[in-house]
Length: 98
Image (cartoon, rainbow, N blue to C red; front, side, top):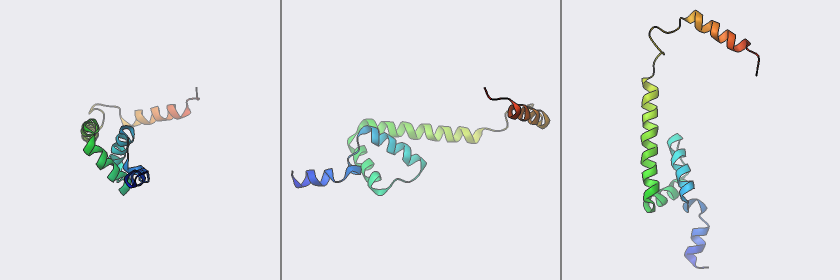
C-alpha cells in the first residue's frame, strides 16, 4: 500500500461519501462540526457539484423556515378567548388514551 493510500485510509472523516456529506451539511446548520468532519466536508464539496447544490438548497430551506417561524404571531385577531383555550386544554388532558 502506498504512503498516500495509507494516509487517506487513516482519515475516515476526510473521505466522506455523498450521503455522509449531506448529513454533515444538515448537522452544520444545527451547530459547529468537529474539525476533521468540517475538513472532510470542505474537501467533498470542492469535488462534488451535486452536494454543493444540495447545500445551497438546504440553506435556502433553513432560512425560509426560520423567517416563516419569526413571522408567525397569535393565530387570528378574533381567535379563541383564553377561557375557551383553557377548557380545550382541560378536555384534551382528561381525554382517555386511544
